[in-house]
Length: 111
Image (cartoon, rainbow, N blue to C red; front, top):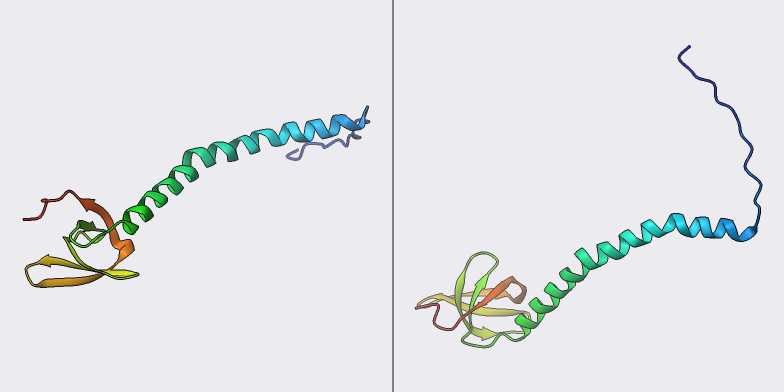
């Protein structure tokens, strides 16, 4: 009573060999379209942001006023290959990794 009968069916005979290929491509088209949309909506803008951030970090110079990911704001005093020294108060310097810098502030922000 609870189980309904299942009837076996034979596969329809293929009229031509090219029809199967077209139906396969037609069923894959929505999946491919989703990947293209995903690339242009999510992946490409993220890559653009990374490129801009890398350019900003490479352009850092002594005397720039910066904000870090941890919320510190200070003035760059020394630049190294992978790190930099930032003066956050008079006589107080901290060492930071370059990738911790999230923003270069306009000149005169710090007083």
